[in-house]
Length: 402
Ligand SMILES: Cc1ncc(COP(=O)(O)O)c(C=O)c1O
View: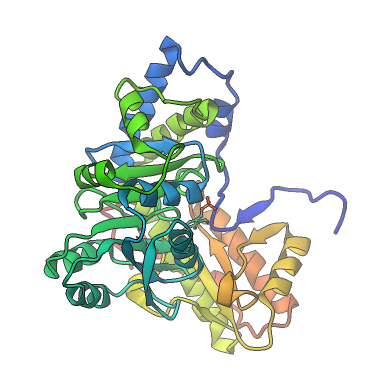
């Protein structure tokens, strides 16, 4: 590789995503006094704006942390040592969350999948019906499994919990779906929604979120897991006046204010259609390349296809990590790696955040050239297939889909 790579770097990992100039400029403004009068305006603006993105009338708690911190906050505020939690292992991130639950002294009951689809609500209902003593205190599901590109049907999971007549709380990770894929905390009866700043919200890493239901807040009063930094109580008290109990990430909050304004200007329904369009175009490319037998979609359930990323599986004998290294060196593009059992078998194309049609076509051209240079069997015409999908797709929520 040359010492300098001209042109812009293509950051096509499924988060962190490109941070738009407007957000970067907002973050670069001088830091303000987080206990002074000006801060309350910023606090009010982000705490109320977040409710619209999570689709909730209830509180959204903001931590200066990566998404992993918000996972921990969701568990320690609602549960007690030894509680059973039903965790659907849809991929690597669901696995990490279940390992955290074990380390915190919880007892995860695992519902496994083959990592090629989302959660199965019928299997959740069945597990809950068999738990007649109600030992299970929470059901944990990752909405968009970033390691596989598969989405789980959260409204159907809620319906399954209700059909089983089970009182378990519903905790959902939306770290790679919030502000990219339609999500409704309140309508879908979610008790805690976990999210992060560095994906659909178009911010750098460093903020994470818990949207909480009334039931979750009630449970937090009885929950006995040790907590201090992650405790919702001082947060909710200080947030009532739009302040924070400890120093917040002031400049990231200013960036969040700008990102929320950008999402409102575009309109969330348009944001979701844009992500659907880019995902459909990417799948069309993969399916065309795959006619030569070298690549296929990791997600095998069309109802569960992710709109924020596509995980692409290579045929036996080809290295996804070697392909990613080649594409980085030749085309200055970062692609997501395979995680856990998918290491070196899968690479992931992120198409979320501040992203448009031509950025997608550039990214897909880089993948198509890379596959050919790496000697992975790859039929030509993937980028053409993607362009046809983009041309046929309308660009608003009411537009016709092909
Ligand atoms: C679905 C999902 N959950 C959890 C995490 C962990 O978040 P973080 O790396 O911000 O701690 C990620 C990170 O990519 C993710 O995609």
